[in-house]
Length: 147
Picture 1 (tube, rainbow, N blue to C red):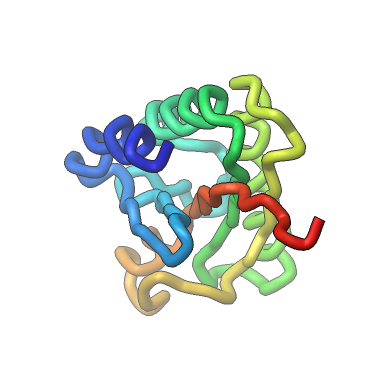
Picture 2 (cartoon, rainbow, N blue to C red):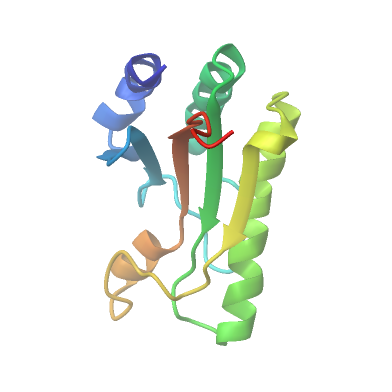
């Protein structure tokens, strides 16, 4: 499943449209780049991110043992309260996109992290653009050993 996902996402990764990071326990994090990030004060997904989400949903629908955590982020312009709500709408937009692609709702979790975990400095326009993003954490479901 992990190999299928990495192979499917290679064109977007190679084109700089997404970052794909391997984390411990076979977890993969897919992050929007400045090319696919949201516009200022917007939760509308840029079309360049659609193919990435389509490929993720295809792999998820093929392999049932995966869960997604969708984390929305913002830059620090605006109030913290506004940015928290905006980050929740960004995560929700990606969550809803996956639902439209028939991903099982129980396998999806979304959360807004506001301006609290910037990827870059908010002192430049480029940094703020990098911070307006969604990260998709793709986690294999591990059978509960205690059961």
